[in-house]
Length: 245
Image: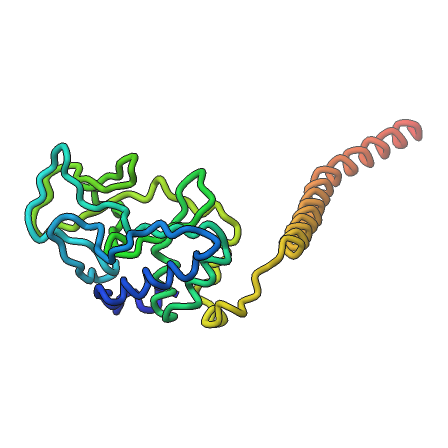
């Protein structure tokens, strides 16, 4: 659904980020602990501004030159919210405005070899990935902070890579794939497929695959068998003519 308002996406203010942070705390508790800071401050530690980029959406730009070097940190994940299960993620989405829920689906991610969904609840969610003709100028540390790869000039966009991210959780992939459909306006009543339903779907897909494969084999078998049968018939006729002579 994020594609529908990609070119007119609003820049979220601090009040909206605080609303999302509160919604997250209510979504994960009491079953799980909150992973974000108690104070509603941003994890961005350098002078920056959010700009709208035509054809790309929102992005983070430096307003002053940022020098690279040891100890220089652009962003810390102090507002990085962890959703350990589908219920907490669904609670969160159902408690926030639909347009922002679309953004949340787009901004969220899964780290490789982890089974939780993460969503940065500050402007850190707006770092864009480098396109084919761009080079990254910001990298992630082992502590998941962002640091400059080189000096970043004032007015330059800060760009990262998403190479360490994935979507290898079934229920999360379902949310991502279905996010543009109107029925997701009602997240609470959304019908999520059960394991049994998923297995039935897999069984039907496998059956269709086997049927299609059988048809392909039959088709090529006929193609191969036809010339062979013609050759045998010709040999048989040739033998009969020899006997007559």
